[in-house]
Length: 82
Image (tube, rainbow, N blue to C red; front, side):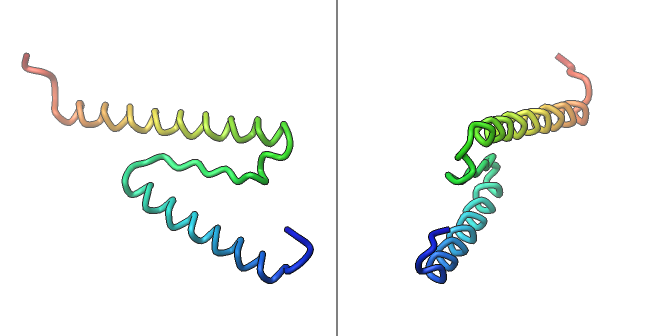
């Protein structure tokens, strides 16, 4: 946070975060995986590693859910008659 004009920056950053939440919600409703990483979260190597881990974990969870969903649909359909 800049040391000068704090009221301006607080308002600006709050609006940025609110806009990000709104966009995230719209994208998730469309089935899009949203991973938002802010620039300040990448200041240190450990932070970059944590961000990469966050992406990997989210992708793995999404893949597992998609697999379970497909499996459930196939199970509901019953065995193939082909």
